[in-house]
Image (cartoon, rainbow over all chains, first blue to last red):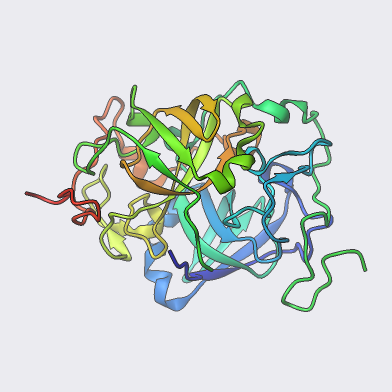
Length: 168
Length: 168
């Protein structure tokens, strides 16, 4: 099962430390999704959607661990009970807001993804398919209202683009 | 970017024709997710979550197309504006209900996934991260209340498990 990059995500977040840990914490962050020419035909009809899922490869995460202490917690948790990037298959997804589509470029807001991240897929966000009022949310019930929600460098490696993502 | 299967999804849906097209249409469908032993340490703390995302490989989809007529529509749409399986990277995700965890086996409900599908990742469903009241939903606004929501064989190939998924 081999993935190919279908584009690149451009964002204001150059390193994990200080980047929003989730879309909900991304405030006004705006970015651009660049779709490679051979896939740009696939974005037809996307402009009608207010929100879209970006599926991407965590290209600057440390190797997989089965237990991690997540950003918003203080205790080790099973990796599949977290959204940490150092997963056996380092895939992330983010339900960003779609501001506009210009040819092969998508303008998006609420972006919590690092600049230069390889894009794997896009799907429309549809509340009927994706929005559920789950009451039981395990350790996440400890996440306080108004929490800062910034990531740090605990799961970051020095990236491939020459930027130090760990402590300087 | 190479994926490895971390488990297998067991479900009552043997073929695309008649299977639910989305979790919302899966009614009482119950299935079991089998996590391979080397990854079972990662499910710690998962039992606290009411709903989980299963990320999986559409192993019985026809090759990628950039335009498709989706199950719930009658007009061709850009593939990234749909949830059709024949994507450049054939990844699906489903926010299923978690009923119980017994060692490396997860019992789940609302399953819309074909039996035998390779599991790629699991993430907890957290409304703060995942649930949004998007108003503009493009062509999906045509999906009628109470629609049947069953898939058919338009995107299915004869599968690798000896079951005919296309017309007999």
